[in-house]
Image (cartoon, rainbow, N blue to C red; front, side, top):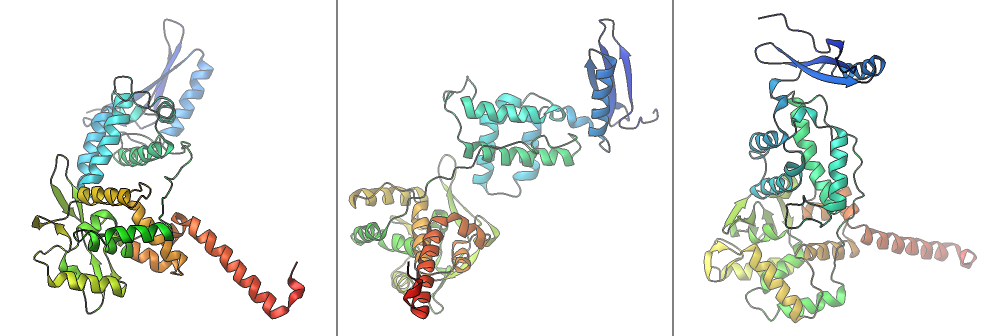
Length: 389
């Protein structure tokens, strides 16, 4: 076996057509052979500039033979090796959908080591302007900035892993400007609407306990569907969130861990909710706090809960909100009633209290205005009418 050439070593020659061509060593094969990067230019001076830039780019980099594999093949390997063992089935499915819909059709055949920041910028620009590839039945539907940002999160992780595996010199997604994030508007039931919804669920003996518990805890849909009686401690008035229920592709349910590390938590229930669950427990024949009405051995299906909520909203003549908006309704009213953000963050299972504050800025803004009014009234009371305009 010959001596390995150092990465960055290169050569320059003039081709018969008059153009200048150069190459540098960017890695090595398993047998010790060199992996080259080829460059060309009209003049020797321009070629030397390109070579110097490439030498700096690949300084300290030693690509492996697998760096020439198509991006699509790497993404499959990455999902299987890095992602599948660490995330929930639904998360893996969402990652795969983003890859198959947007990355694979446009960049899947290109070698991992040749994906450039220009490729990434071009991909995002095309998705924002035209959406999917022409062959897709939904071609022409432009992607939202939020979807492109989700795709970027997946792509960035995959290319970070590729860089660690010496498949690319740098992560080409680094430094790419992303579209502005536009959060989905939250729909929160106001006091009057909440009263109407409560009046409506009182008429439903099957679902009343479920929706009352949801409105007083703000649990995620999968979390409330996954509650077992072993999670409820009447003496302490607490409820432990230890699992979440999701629908499998094609039907059936899967039971997994909560969404985040902070998702596993114990919350203190309002007395009315603790009493409601205690009464429900006395007549229960299931291990699940909320079970399928005709099948006590199965937890309530998240899809059934969603459909029933929609029916109740129609009956109450209320806006057609999402199930997650019941969680927003709980959080909004909790903050507006004086609950501090750190306590609410723990109840909701957020990673940080700052995330809770950022999510509910519409409430905290109102709270700040009320606080300012209180301080103003207090100062007038202390210092007299001289402070009045």
